[in-house]
Image (cartoon, rainbow, N blue to C red; front, top):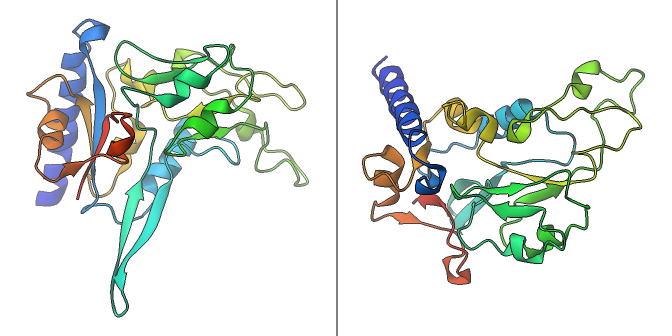
Length: 241
């Protein structure tokens, strides 16, 4: 019971941090995430909830969880590494887009304009974290006796409704897609779906510019690190190891 209360308190605090950050001008916010690898058990709840929240089709995954084996037999262990978009402060993906369809917002989130994207996939190649995937327009039940209608429900990324119709190639079909910290939830004062569904409360989210926020305090811990720091991309997703 104590663990449940603790988890609820952490989520409530982070939601309060988000709502406090939304009161500031967009340019003064800097959304970021900290993932505690010591707490992640590889359950993939964050991956599944992200797919459900954003109605992702086959091949499009915003938050895979990598399974890593560490050590030498017989002294081996496993580590699970959730890998969302790093929301880099120096994103290499934005520099290669020929039509400026992907850019960094004032609050630090790297976004994609689905109507502008031409599907060239240069940004997929440029991303050093493999955080982008391409929407080929498929559905899980397309080759079955009956196409399930729930797969054709619209999604609401970036605060806009995106329809999905068989045989009609309209955005986001034919576009590159990626994690955007659940912007449609965030701008309503809610936490990203992956944060709320983690069974171990391994995810911390909020405004890195707010020293009183839980995420800023966790990112400042001495065991905090970022992936591929040597590349100079300045990720806003930190890991506790």
